[in-house]
Image (tube, rainbow, N blue to C red; front, side, top):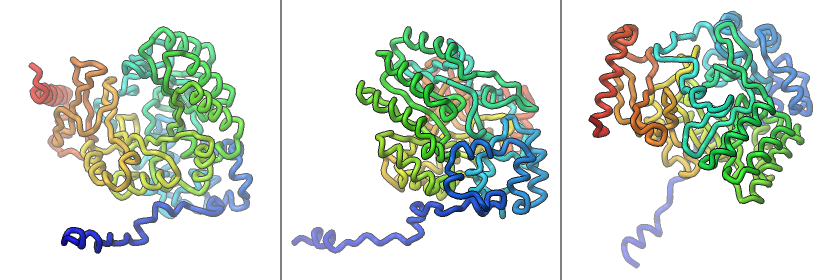
Length: 459
C-alpha cells in the first residue's frame, strides 16, 4: 500500500458541533399561545386558514388588541405613527405575529418586514420612483409585463394575504394609503382575456410567471382556469405560480384542500403535456419556517409539486452570512430549493431595509459551498428602469464611494446602461451632499456610465 493510500485510509473528517445542525430545529408546539390574545386558541382553530384571514392585523387597534401587555408602550406608539407613514397597507397574519420576539420587537427580523415604525424611517433615495423597475412601461396590455424575449409576468390580481413593507409593486398592491393612490389590477376575467390573447399572438413567449398581488388570494377555480388556459397554448412550456403564502399563512395548504388540489391539478396536467409547472414562494428568514411550514410544504412535495424560493436581502433581517446560511439550509430541510436572493429594490418608505450591492457579493461568497450547489441561490440586482435581473457580480462598473453600480442587459436592450444605487445613509457626508445636489447627482451618474462604457469597450 502506498503512502498516499495509507493517508487517505486513515483520514477522518472532524465532526461538526451540534450547533451546526440548528437549521434542522424547527419551532414546534402551540407557540401562538404565548400571545395573550390567543392563549386559548387550539391547534385546529389556528390551522384554519379562514381563522387566520379573519384575525389578521389590518389596523393599529387590532395590533394593540393582540399584543397588549407583551410589547413595550413606546413600540406601540411608534408603530401607530408608522402606520400613517407607510406606502403599503398593513396586513399581518396571526401566524406571523406569533413568531415575533415581543421582548425585543424593534430588532426582530419578522417585525422589520411587516410592521412599520416611524422612528426607523429614512429619507427615500433621490433616484426612487414608485415603479422603479418600470413594469408598467413594459405592459402591452394591463397586468402583463413583457420584458424578456421568452418570458412574461402575469399580474393576476392586486391583493395579498399579507402586505410586505418592501413590496416592489407598492404602486399597485393593496389598498390606497395616506401616501399612495394605487394602480388597481383587479382579479378580472375580462382583463385576463386580453392577456391570454396577447400571449397567443407572441410565439416567442414560453414562460409565464403568475403573480400579482399573490395567487394565494385567487379562488381555486381561478387557479385552474388560468393554469388550464396557459397550458392550452402551444407556445407556453413553463408556468410559475408565485406566492408568499407558504411563508406567511402555511395553514392554507393544510386546510384549504380545494385550493391545494387545484394547484396539484395544474401541475399534473402540465406534466401530462410535458410542460413544467412549479410554485415559487418567498421566505426571508429562518424564523418563518416552523413545524406548520414543514407539514404544509410536505403535502405539496407528496403531490409532486416542485417549490422554489426567492428571498429579498434586507438590512437587519438576513444581511449576514450566518442568517442567510441558516435560511438556505432550513429551506433545504423542508424540501424548498433556494433560487434567487434579490438585492433590495428602491422602494418608497423602506430605505431602512436596503443594503449595498457589496453586502450581497460578500454574503454570496460566504454561503457558497455551505450546501449543495442546486440549493444555493443566485444573488441578483433587479436594475432600475427595466433592465431586469443581473447577477450582482456582473456589473460593468461599481463605485463603492458613490454607491453607483452600472450594468448591461443585452437581452433587454444591448445599447443601454442600467443602474443600481446603494443606500444614501451609508455613504460619506461629502457624497451625501453631492447626492442632494441635482447637478452633482447627474454628473456622478454620467461619470459612472462613462467608466462602465470604457470597461465594456464602448465608444
